[in-house]
Image 1 (spheres, protein in one colour):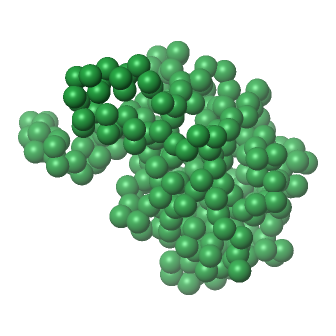
Image 2 (cartoon, rainbow, N blue to C red):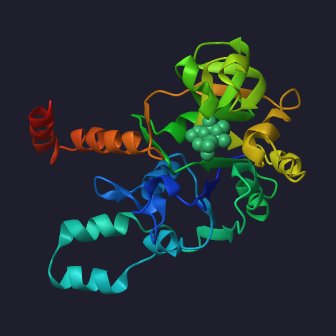
Length: 289
Ligand code: G1P
């Protein structure tokens, strides 16, 4: 029996320099795709996978993220008075159980591994998910729910993976494959942002993980990796051989919303999925074809 997966860590301390000036005074995780901030997509995906406790790893200027999941009493009262039922429903959908969100501050930008290590007290002895809100997922079965199932099946660490063109592997954590079983791939090594010619495969990690708490012990050594940062990938690599470690070819699509083109494509894809917006969006796209 695997321990139930109830906790998620969401690193949200990044500066968002790629979206300046939009992110000068606003957290990049609050950028909306259609009408919902990136962080809410991530939280909803996590809840759909059975996550009940959230840890936001934040930094300066990120308070709006936490506010967003609070109850906005004045706003709700006003909407009630005006009988705006649909808007009220939308608002209530973003509230979470009281006490289910905690925040820790990262203070110094030492990398993703350091951000996850900052959540160590929250994680304790439990398995946990990591969701990077920049990676926006469009999947029939929510991506983290697919990973959670794979965790229950394999009893260990699982990361969501996809194939990318060879020349782009240097932007990601890359798998050294032990056995390719189709949807599941067992892993014998992991490399963070390798030079293209040294990459062991073109199977790359995307921002969804289910990890065992032992990874924290490896992070605690604060060894610097690619880019001089403490890399989560390097600490995960140390678990291999001691615990099951798999990549999962998830079903669905990913939009890299840390990148302007990816963010714009996400707007189009998510608008086309909406019955109220799809006809207008199609018309717009034709105008620019
Ligand atoms: C991080 C991880 C990397 C992973 C990527 C997915 O990199 O370090 O292994 O492939 O997220 O989005 P970042 O995009 O923060 O540079």
